[in-house]
Amino acid sequence: MSDNTVFKKIALILFGLVLLLLIANIVVKKISGKDEQPKNRESLSGIEIDKIFHTALNNYGLSKNWIVKKRIKNISDDSLYSTYIIKVPKNLPIPLLILELQDLFWDDDVNLKAEEFTPAKKTIIKLSSQNHLKVAAEFSYDENLNREHGYAAFMVYDFPFDDEDKKDELLKTPEPFYVVLPPSTNSKSQIDRINKSEKRYAILLDDNIDELVFKLDGKYSEDRLKRSIREIVGTFSNAAFFIIDDRSDLFESDKYKFIENEFRKRNIKIVNKSMLSSLDANSLNVDGKFQDFMLTIQKNDEKVLLVSADEFLSIAQIIPSYRKIGYKFIYPGDIIIKR
Figure (cartoon, one colour):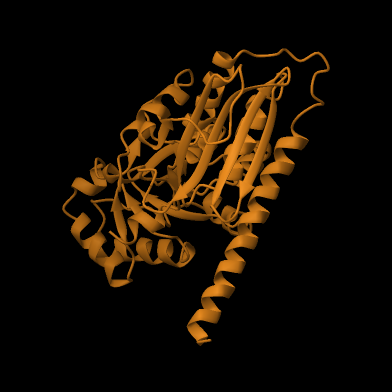
């Protein structure tokens, strides 16, 4: 046996272990977040079970083209409403679909039975109510299928410097994002906290820099600008990158080219703020505006969304539902730095 073959087998084993741990983690979360099932659960008709079954498939972004209504060999029942042959992308574990079904049928008198056939590489799922089979489906992986959604990343501004509870909630959010900070003493005091939370930050350059030691102004001399730039770079040396508000007076000034060159000499990337998307939302329509934004992300798209801390804490609750259907959420640097 060659070394390559051994390494491939080890890699497959490790991948399998990671997958099992992931699924186990999801199982624990689903179980721990539920009360005991109701004792007098309501039975469902075949039509009702079929509708909820399709909801589970939609929740994970399965294309209608992958779902074929077709008889399954050796499966029959007088009350059987529908049977399906379903192809699943290789990167979507079938056990996750089973967990979704269990979750959706939790409050109903519906029995779910799943049986995996290893040689045939398929899984049969049967949904019954009142001991009568209503819906059955045969699932199998197809390595040629992909859920065709793009990539999104988040930049979070309006960092809650003076609100410890909100700050703690923000930095403990498991979703990937970068914090956007103004160059200030207050920002400097938060760097360790952000780093310990395993987050990164970017620095925003605009007309609102108040502290003289960091201030940039198109009216300043080049020597004065150099001193501010040295202070900014020295204080925020581990920033992921810098953002310039390209609608600011600073950007429009004759000195901006000099400022940009000074940062470039220090191998610092400056990103135009206009390259970032925004929600243009108010407190009442954040989730709706976020949905509109996600619908603009097509296959292979990579978009960075600039949101306030309050907006991000609101949409963080619904990000997992988009991940389930195939959207990828990554760090902004994975998009911006490679551009």
